[in-house]
Length: 422
Image (cartoon, rainbow, N blue to C red; front, side, top):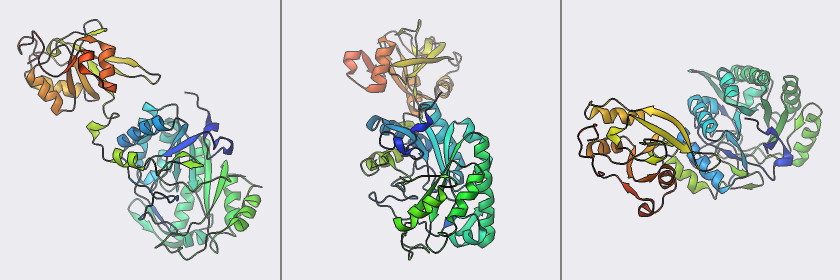
């Protein structure tokens, strides 16, 4: 799918007032400890990296994405920026990106990482269509880096001091090179820390530019309580602007950063993290079977593909339907039903066949299959009517009587024998 990569508001200032982003907080663990970072505290009115009101699982993140897009259709970018590091949580990160690809392929996909754990996943990132990646690099000299990072964790090994900074720097520089080889746009975030790296930050710009990085974001330190750098002052415009001008001679500079939270959402200048906090927290409590994403489809017992007109036990196959991105519903595929005559095991097997379906529609159903399917998360409906009318009821709700849909129960002529529907 062709995507307009200019619609990333962090990489293109011109779109910051018309295109929004959402950060999906699915990555709680981190593999380095920066001396300016404390993820313990969260205030919904505070905007700084590393904080979020809730942590989501991948299926919850895409459910949240659905709700965000319904409220703010100007969102063009889905990103993962913590609250830890995406590649200290690679399984969650890759699964979230996979599900986003499946459900919202029109969005731009973005990741923000310290670069420590990203190398094994470069091909995955490219294959999943991630177009923008940010690597945070605040030093290109291990002596300087040793003052910024308390420790660096490589698998089960923890490094301190210059050795840790050296290992991290090697991974970061190789990450930029590998990302650019795969055609991915790279931004470098550099934290400006007074007395630590403020006289070194231009060297960061030079080195990253030689590796092909596209843009640098010099971010003033935000002193945070209970960190080694809490006593430092936040550098002002008189410090940062000259650095950006000098750095701009080597690499394009970002000048409109809002130091976004790990659950930031909305336009850069009109963040809606606070107003959507309740939605985020509600999604974080969803169980797998409650999330639409976990079971996006509906199975239908039909003879000709227009009406729901087969008893569950008589159906030798089921049509699988889902919501269409453009509205309405679309036929996905046909799936074979388990063989007749297997007793109760047949319904357990059918539950497995329909494991990605939230409901099954049929003209009649017996009590045993009804109970088995419901136990396994597939809601059976007895329906008399057109498939699309019934699908509308399942997906959108409505008046059961008006739609001639009866939840469960046994339809006429289904006595529980014969074709195995009992």
